[in-house]
Length: 224
Image 1 (cartoon, rainbow, N blue to C red):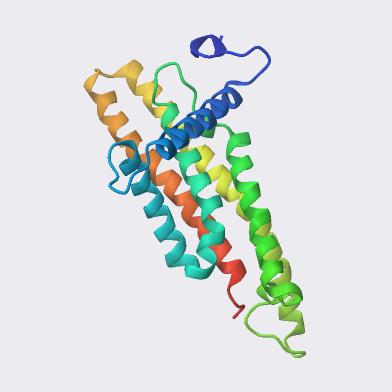
Image 2 (image 1 turned 180 degrees about the horizontal axis):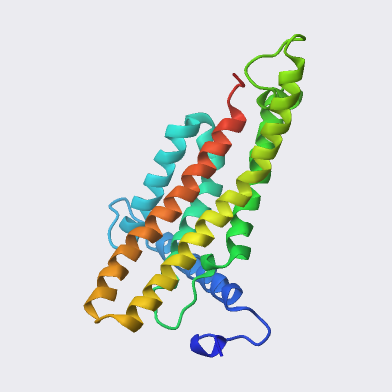
């Protein structure tokens, strides 16, 4: 019964997967359009996309630095565009919100987890373990170092969980709030809620990419 409410139904494929594909197809098409019509004086779609790209790149550069921001930017920009579009798809009647499913948000958070430790090991090699031993490293502080190691390991494994659950929970609560208000109150109030929903969609995408950027920045910087 739930699947019949959506405009696009593929037998055997959950709606969040279908609309994840829709989001990817839209991003590819928009990318091809911008690439084909690119000019030195941006306008229209190119101007809009360049504004978002510049904001994401500045976010990377401010938190990671100019050297590593170029390497991490493709991942951060991909996550930013994809999550933002998935958030907004749910505001279109007949469309599902892919990020209102924990599987979608987890699929975005897990690559950040692996990328964080990949670059941490690539930059620091064996010294990367210093990130998990706390600020005091000596023989006398060995018990504290062991304790800090387990605390840091648990904290790092909790990162993809918190990233995925935060985005998932906010998008689900947003959808439920709109559904309840549209059934209980006059039309103009859901319109106000939809306006707030636009803000929620942008903020949640920003928070996800900001935390991802900070995790990557922490992996490549020297341990203190």
